Length: 539
Image (cartoon, rainbow, N blue to C red; front, side, top):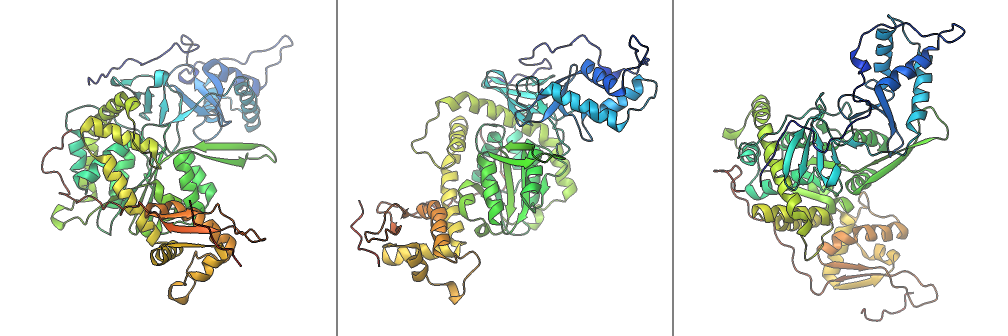
């Protein structure tokens, strides 16, 4: 496939007011106009006039107003905030009216008027870092001041001077270097990472999928003991797809803190995770498939704002057993091995090497993404795993590169589910019960009675009553199914109480899950190529 690059805009179109002067760049003084009675218009009126001369106003699909400059980058500026239109407009006002300073009340009144102007038209899509352009092209915002973007199609990619997609930016975003092709970008990235070839190929496929905004992405999880380079690897990976001054984040303290982080970054990495509380586990699962959070708007009693997002997530951990439940099915687990002392490099050396190869790595990844887009419409899977859209991308990568990332991913996922179940005392007890008796049926209360407490002590997370036990079995069903244990909760007892029954049994045709593929060399020696029986009545 031929890769095309150009400095000309792709799918560009004439922008309103193209020949009008940009008021953000002029310092021409003007006197305040007067009406028929000789009165000057208010400062708020003059502010609105200045704003409408240089910007158009839109409302995003999440209900937030933005200003878009009539000249320059296709970027959505929030009306308020440190980097928003309000601050720019205050400076422009002082430059225009000979040093006159607009009052806070005048600025507030102007912003209210401009918000009303933004609401006059239908909402528009405002993307963060990645978006879908005309004819299905994928557009990646480089995050540079000039507003350039990479446009990727099934025929190649190029760097456009002006993005065909309206992007917003945040303080958590950093710029990306312009990509270029030198033929061995993937090999240069592999040389920096502590992983074998099958693992690296899964990572490369995940990186490509990370720029496809309309599909769920599994949580990339780097596992390994101390000294395996988990945090540095995660930092480099995030800075490839969505550079940030804070590529690694601490575990959020609550859902509002998480929402603020997720709203302002396309890719996030939670570093050194040991345990995940239930609320965060559920929140991460929803962020993978698409989440929405409704909150009260600032300084209002009854107005609300809606934050909707699907994000690309990464984590680092030592103990994968702490990542249990639904989250385990949404992981791409990559094991890292201990780095030998003669192969260790300093942080400064790694940073220098990474910055040197980053443009070539980006070029190679965009090349691969274009090839994937070309074959993806024809990819069909015999069976559909939980992360089916991501699995199709892996199959497309395998078709293009003659790799086996999909098989490796499915085998690793089976092992992750087993590890997660072993890390859950209640789930492990259920699996042991089925191994012992083959098939068990009864109520949730009876299940609590028959399962022995580990060591005679109720462990943390063990259900305290029948209602909680039934719910836990329901949540554990996918993990139990991955090891060949089926859960049926559709039956009722035949007595007058009609209790809901749980039927736990070993699937007759289940097979032992595949083991993870053998590991090869951690660093490449050369460049890689491209119907149930009737049940008795319950007492």
